[in-house]
Structures are given as C-alpha cells and as structure tokens.
Length: 550
Image (cartoon, rainbow, N blue to C red):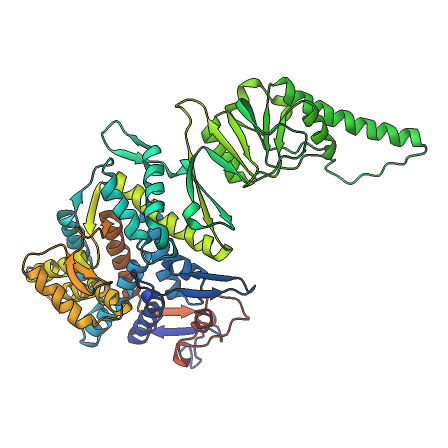
C-alpha cells in the first residue's frame, strides 16, 4: 500500500502459484510425463501411436521419440523431457528408465512433503543417494573387453528386445558389433574410442528386415544424372562438390533488351561456354566421379557424360560429409580454385537392382561403414532404425566404458537393498529421502512385471528374497515370470547408461523440488496465445495440449 493505494507489481493476466501449491503443480506435471512412457518399458512394453498436427503417424515405444513427438505445453513437463534428451545424448538408451525414475522420485518426495519434511532435506537426501548409487553401480559392474563379441552382442540384443527390431535381433546385433569393431581405435592411454561419425545408417523399404546388411564404405541412394555415364570405377578420383554446375545468376534482378535473334544466340552461346568451362575444370583436375550437393544443368550433364565422368546431383549434406571420411579429399565450394589435391580416392559401383551406389575408400587412413536396414513399410523401417540406433549407441558406450550389468531389474533391486543399508548411516531427515530414493529405484522391476502381466508385488518380494540370499544378478525373466540369473540368461545392460539414468533422474527431480514459486506473465503454458490452458487451479492449466497428443 502506498498512501492508501494498492501497489500493482504484476500485470492483470499474470498468474502466481506459491509454496505447497507450486510444488504440487510441478510434481503432478512431471509425473504425468513419466506415466505416459511407463507402459513402454521392457520387452513386453506396449507401443504408442503419435499423430502430429499434419496427420503424420509415428508408432514407437522409444521413450525419447515419444516425448519429442508429444505436444507438451507445460514448462515443468518440458524439464522432464530434457531428462530423456540428455540420457539419449549421453548414453544412447535408457530414456524411459530415466524419466520413469524421475517421476517416481517426485511421487515419493510428495509423500515426504506431506509429512512436513522440508524440500531442502529431500534434495540433500536424493543427492547423497544418487552419489552412493553410482558408486554401488561401479562396484557391481563387471568388466568387458572390446573383443568379447559374445557378451557385446548380448548387450545389443538386450537393447533391441521389445522393439520391432527384436524379430531379427541376432542378425542386427551381429551387424552392429561388426560395425563398432571396425570403427574402434585404441587411444594412447589404453582406452578405446568409438567414433560413430564413421557409421551411416541407410534404410530401404520393400524388402524383409532379415535382408539388412553391413557394407564397407558409403551407400548413396541416387541415380546418375545421365544414362550414358559409366557407373563403375575401381580406383576413381572423386570430387565432392558444394557448388551447382549451372549458369551463374546475378545477385540482382536485371533486364536485357534483345533486338535480334543473333543477340539471343550470343547469350545462349555464352551460357553454353560457361557450363563447358566448369566441366573442363573438373576434367582437368582428373575427377572420374562427381558427387554434387546442388543441381547440375542438363547441358552440363551432357558434357560430363562425353568426358566419361560419373555425376550425381542433390547428394545429401550428411552423405557428402560421410563420403569425405571415406574417400578423403576436400569438399569444394568454388570450382575456380579446384586442384587435383582436392580429390578423394575410392572405388564406386552401381547396384542396379537396389538402385544404389556403393563407395569404398582406399587404404587404411579412411574408413567408414554403412548399415543398410530394410523393412516392408516406412513405419516398420523407421522403428527398426530407431531400435538399431539405440543398440548401436549402447554397444559403442559399452566398448568405450568397458562395464556391464545384469538386466531384468537385477541391478535396481540390488541398488535398493544397498541404499537402504546406506540410509542407516545417514543422519537427520535426509535418511527418509535416501529410503524414498531406494523405493523409487525399485520402480523398474515393478513396471517390468506389470507390463508383462505379472503380479508386481509378488515379483518384487521374490527378487528381494533372492538378493538377500546373495544372488546379486537375480532379475526377472518377463517371458517365463521366473526370477533367475539374468546375466547368464543374456540380459546385459551397459553400466554407464544406468549411472546416467540415475544421475539425470535425480537432477531433474531436485530441480523440480527446489521451485516454490511460479510466476507467469500469462497462463502457465509454453505455447502461443492460441493455446488453451488456464490457471493451475483450473485443472493443471497448460497440460491440455499434452493430453491431446497421447
């Protein structure tokens, strides 16, 4: 109040949610996201059909894909989506696990808040538990050598189980392991580095997934620009071009008055001469093959064919970059400066049946492999590609990190048991938060059982009993419903992905818990003015857009 008049700080449309209401709002939003992907977890997880505003359909059970495609219109929910994206970037898989654990941590935190435990104590307890969990994962993990093909294949197969790639997981796992081994190099300090930039994934519809294959070099899904061009070269000089082989246009609009047919012919002759000079420069440099990122004029195509040069136009930028890794040379942006040293070297051959070019490098300095994935329809091949990408990332992480764990919920139950023992050494109210963290981690075996149609309580009791008897690899076989040594059964996961999932989930949960005041200029959605949504009191304003996309 100022001289009897109220002081207006925020605009009329501004909204503010404080204290317990803000915490409940945030926790509810975050849990809604986590529960949206829980049913996709594990080999028996279900798929989601996502329809975007253009009517395009995506069918998947990949956590990060679901969250990216959903029309989420809530700032807190978007923070949880970032957990999935971070997990995908850092570990390549485990996105559903990370988001589900984050949601369960917040659910358990809500119970502690209702017992009047301050958020600061919960945050500290979660942080302590997360640190201890990562140490325990490192202690439980088993070492794996990069040349242990059998064990690394099991890691790939475990990643693909439950996805559309599962039907051919043995073949695909073999392809993935071969690809990773070909691009793995040993560093000076004895560690192994896997450069996934040297792996390309191409897809093709109309064939069975069982016909997928691994090819040395690059696969270019393009046709030659002229029928008279040669399509096979054993030892070719290859030009990678980022400039159109077309008549150069002026930067400004111009008008030319032509008074006679001779003048028109002069213009045409000049254009023809310009194109011929471009082709001559390519030929003089010694190029046998041209992969052009931009267009090639019809007349230039004719001249290139006469010179016996193979040319491909509109090559994707990503393919040009990959070709550079394989054949060497430089990506040329100005033909006037073209030199023989700019050319790469490799073999080129044409597969007329598949209408593909295969390009292989020469020598040991340049290497790269292409995984050619085949499927019956676009939806099938898209989901196959997502599953293979995850498995490829997981195998690469395993080779470079060198640690694996038993899957099927075994690591989570063992972690929970060790965290409860650790909680006894934590003083104060943080002890309750550590115990809540242990309960949250056990969500994974519970959900695995639920998604397989099993009784989650009975399963968890059996798992805990097995771990109390010292069976630290005891996990759930979702196909038989039995508790068994999942490591021996071939259910193997990378330790790094599990560490990252625990770390990401904890950081996201603590970030949400630390907020006690939400101030919004308008409604609490993150979309434009057309988005529907109201105040949090009106049924979680801003979550409406999300519900419509699930």
